[in-house]
Image (cartoon, rainbow, N blue to C red; front, side, top):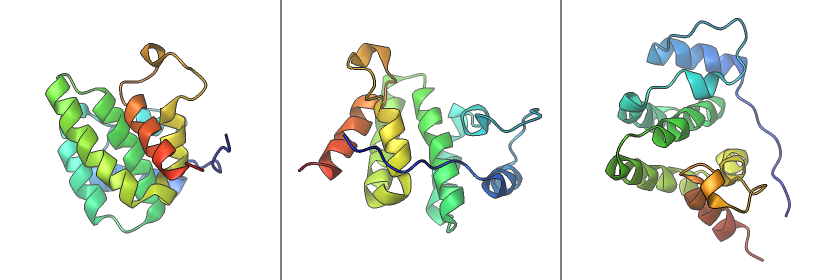
Length: 132
């Protein structure tokens, strides 16, 4: 299986999204920033911001925050609701989020029970785009 080109959250995206979305964090470095700053209860705010965001680096970083927020949804109904919204966004912007889709697909583990809840959705997206 061909892996996508690596992509990382940029310092500029961190600074802009922190300002725009009032993220609070206390880190000396920004490793895993995108997995730490989001709050699951603010997912609709993040999705709304994503839909108006024009910068690709910001959209990439914000999608990582959104996916993490989906993982942290407390109810199955909310998990499914936001997964469906994100599935559409990822399908529409597949190339931009190709690395994220591959990462969250957790292909290095065949046992889905040892993966994230969103892994089946990500694998489905990946396989639809990479058939043949």
